[in-house]
Image (cartoon, rainbow, N blue to C red):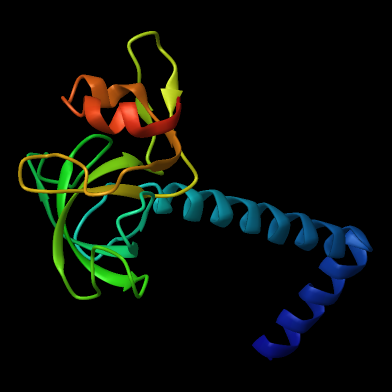
Length: 167
């Protein structure tokens, strides 16, 4: 009896709403997809932490590295200008750095936004790193792509001088 009453109520509800029910469910699903896509884009914008794969933007021979540990950073992870310890995952066959080597790197591009003194914010599309030695000198002789001027405050002036574009 309760099932019969529920089916009658649902039929009455459908007839009252008519075609609006289909449009309403379409609007709800579209808003849900939009909210979930913005949530995912916000979720991807995090600190550079352990197991983050970064692109290498110098001519040291490495293509991709995976972060092992963030040095001199806050507890959450590394940001622009911070030094990390990384393992080389992909490398050119005749480069200075080989696959599997543990190297130091300076984060020069990060997908997470960072505020500037003038009120603007800087963020990049990818996470990128320049490989350096223990003293902080770059291994490569060229740096590709834009590099933020915040590296000057972090004492990475040599990387800025090698960069082709300063953002």
